[in-house]
Length: 277
Image (cartoon, rainbow, N blue to C red; front, side):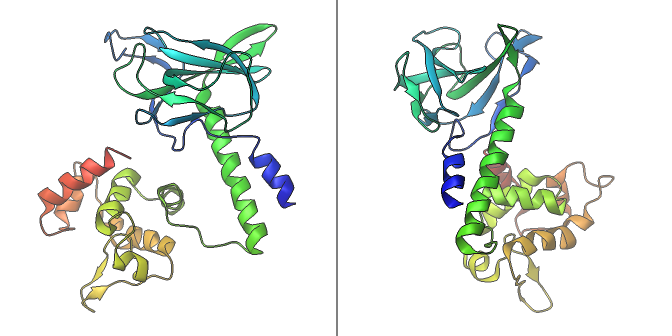
């Protein structure tokens, strides 16, 4: 069973180690020419210059292009009925005709071609009646991500003979926040990062308290059985007081309830972190 799961897991991969979409598929204002109504034939993924770019499935390298315009240096992989373009690359590690597996390093990301900064452009096309038709790659990547997560969860259950505690990371945090109905999850995640030093503080590690929730009557931080319980506690203790009629935005709400001592400084730090998530 484990070998079967491993085989299924190694047959797919995400194009980057971390997926964050910065520009959607469809019409938008061109970020270079500022022309409105320009069709964006793909999606843009945030990444630093030099990030590893992976083949998402087994396939054949159909085209390798070196260019300083358009998609810049780019690679097209044919997956039989589906082909993917990886654009704005730097160093390319494959050649035309190469057969690649899922997870093969295709290139390093960069900002070549028509680009305002380093990112990975993904364009997807599906073969329909002998012709390649453009499709939105976002649902495909989202499905791929969900599939990989489910396989990893199955492997963990099989390995531990029971469902292990979910590790505390941003991916799982966003998932639990969604389950708990957390409002403004990016801002709340930024609060976690600031309050705990990205999960390194003693209050986080010893009390499972992600947000510095303080019990004034006991003069101590709240203790939770799990970090997931802390998320539910945040909703119960903090967000139940949010009132969109009183608060113009979530930062104003945090200031109104006096979440921290120096709220202007606190909100500035939270805002800066939230902009990176």
